[in-house]
Length: 238
Length: 346
Ligand SMILES: [Zn+2]
Image 1 (cartoon, rainbow over the protein chains, first blue to last red):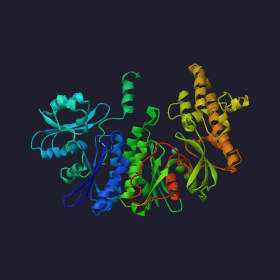
Image 2 (image 1 turned 135 degrees about the vertical axis):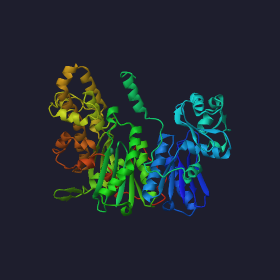
Image 3 (image 1 turned 180 degrees about the vertical axis):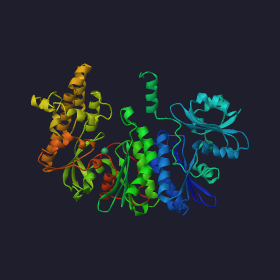
Image 4 (image 1 turned 90 degrees about the vertical axis):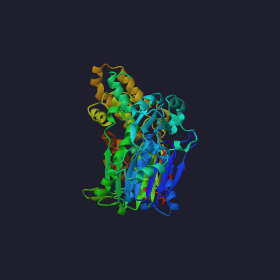
């Protein structure tokens, strides 16, 4: 089975191709600090590059796996729209993978014990976070929260300590370490959300092929809806 | 056949066009979720586009009696518009093309409005022929207002554009000031039917012209401006009690509408004079306005207004533009990005 996986939940664009023999090639675009994410311009071109190197075409892909977030709204939509369009066009199967679970994946595999907290920078002084046990089970479901509220998430997950990974963990290292979490060094590759991990999840039998339309897991409602409700609650005052 | 997508604002659209420029389907899924916000919310529009787009594509194929196997070109709107919304249609279109290594055509939304005139339209007496260049094209909607010189099928020259609000936006904002809700443009026009268009002296209105007011410099050119008109209506309504407002609402609406229409008609006439042409095409949602249609019927030029569904945002017009624009072969289109503003006039 040829599997094409990608993730656009963070500023990075990550694409991986997994061939029938289990070998995986990967391409990654990390925009310079402050630069515009290249999801729309890079994603399909990177996929094309990997396929060409493997001597394959988009029509040869059996299964498309896409990271559905949480993460940047526009990035998620570019990724999911691309995945859905490719699947609609070529007839490939479509699989949705949690970007938080994919972020935790490599660390769960390489560490025999201990929980992993996946933390994606959600901007506006918040993170998207979820906790996973060794073996991959979910201890605390993904949510948007302030870094100061991480301690309560750890408590809810029932874990004494955990390794925190992701661009959110790097950004809020001080707050997370204060909560008793072990944050890997800034340059650790474990902080990267990699499409190879999306492929690994999608190749496993745990993940079903979607019968429902695949959509982003935004975890946040649009501001306008919240503002409208807030206005209603406050009797129209804002 | 061409399959085209359009998602630049709040309508999710897909259409299939045959080789002769006949729309075999033209599916428009309008999002009615924005009314309670008093305007289109980009994030909500983008979410809905993603939920709807693949289904709308399927519907457009089914209605056309076609499958993707029949399609030999995919097109999508690249801009201008809401970037987050555009990216859903553009990413989907690029992926649909890439999955089959089909060529792809990125289309400028305004070129799409122009190309709506190149569609042959089915009618009770057979197909109406396309409206061929050269002509002047007035595009007026909630998002854009411009005059274009269309000399060929594959481009246009901008003759004039709005310096502030779009005409449709002016209608909606006026409607809100008159308490007609959002989107209130059509309600304002209905109210205007019972009013006197000369009752109030708004900038550019028949009332003002009758009183011999000095004309602003821009009023001699081909650009539009509706901000002053909007402010004038605001002042006029502010001075009125709510009883007085409801009493005079019809006159205010009629005068306000007349000023917008006068602005559109006078500049269209001027554009025809300057280009020496006697053919005018009209597109955009404001083309549905009865008063505008009535006034354009009196200008003594050949006026072409496509069917209502081809005037408002739709994908058949995008497919029509794609028919005449350069197509990119796989993989040359994979890196295309959406753009928010600007006209790619050629
Ligand atoms: Zn438009």
